[in-house]
Amino acid sequence: MPSVNDMTTTITPLGPGRFSRIIRQLGIDTQYVLLGFPLGIITLVLCVTGFSVGLGLAVTVVGFPILFVTVLQARGFATLERARIGPVLRTRLPHPYYKKAEPRAGFWRRTFVPLTDGQSWLDLLHGTFRVIPSTISFAFVITWWAGTLGGLTTVLWDWSIPRPPDNKDLPELLGIGSGAELRVLFYTGIGLVFALTLVPVVRGAALFEAWAARAMLSGVAELRERVAEAERGRDRARAQTSAAVSAEASALRRLERDIHDGPQQRLVRLAMDLGRADLQFDHDPAAARATVAEALSQTRETLEELRALSRGIAPPILVDRGLRAALTALAGRSLVPVDLELPATEERLAANVETTAYFVVAEALTNVAKHSHASECKVTLARSAYGMLVTVEDDGVGGASLAKGHGLNGLADRVRASGGELTVTSPLDAGTKLVAILPI
Image 1 (cartoon, helix red, strand yellow):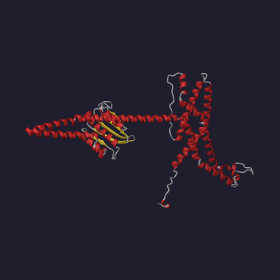
Image 2 (cartoon, rainbow, N blue to C red; image 1 turned 180 degrees about the horizontal axis):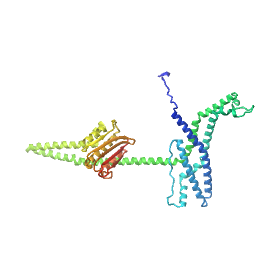
Image 3 (cartoon, rainbow, N blue to C red; image 1 turned 180 degrees about the vertical axis):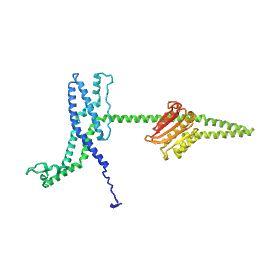
Image 4 (cartoon, helix red, strand yellow; image 1 turned 90 degrees about the vertical axis):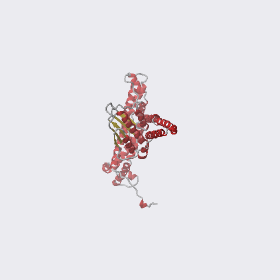
């Protein structure tokens, strides 16, 4: 068990940067509360008056334009309040959605549309009742600032207050002594208590008023924004799932086609050759040996094709030695000269990221060799703020596309399935640039 001498306590000093931030926030909170009180009185008078007059005259034609003007002015005060709340809560409040009339709508249509908007009535409700939290916050802030400034400056103004001989100050009434020095010391101590609690009290009062306003002015908008973000996340997840299924189906179809066109045909021929050699052994051993030799050649070629196909499924070098070694080997096998630019430090990434990056480069180099007629190609891997950036450029004839039916469409599905994005720039006779952004 460690002794008391072995235990150390770390005290974080209040540095000048942190102190300046506290003072700046104190000023922001104070002006917010002090300005909020008169604004609360103004909005109370205007909103209550406009709503009462407009509702009273609603039986006539005049009442609806008055309600329209009242709702619009409440909306203006609400916009001002959202701007004022931001520095207090240290966040930007979303601007709510307001119903709007069509551009060619008539006068009465423009008048009635704002009256059917729920957020407009919440703005009017805030303009009517905001004076309650504003008054409470204003009372606390004024009291604490007055106590702080008045108490700490007692020594400067105490002498100027006339006191009759029989007038007793608070220290004497409390029975703790008498005299000017003791009186100044007593009131300075009270000011010090107010000063030490000024920051949390003012901060609490400002947050109380700001939260009350935020609930009515941005609560619905924030809820809608969260719902919209959840829906966007759901759509992204569905798009990634669909892309993964499409990429998997495309890869399986291509693998099936490659096996059917390559190894399967060779194996059929190998079986036929071996059957012919079996028949030739009895009456023509020389021909049988030639057939077996040809079958061995077919076997080696089939093994080479199977190895090439296995590299397309799960290249062992990628798993064992990483993306850098796999891309170097890929560039070495390319029919078009490849200039590789890889990160200086070799750091293993997530398996799905490395696999996707490898297949992006592999598919791109295959397309370059088959269709681009390029003389050289450049492959670049780089980290960015968005993730891993995989770029493949060539100086070929261009014309590549991500449209459905093109070979790159399946590659785009694979990239989207991993949460990334693939773009292709390929003007005619100006080369092709393929860029994949993969999240890491």
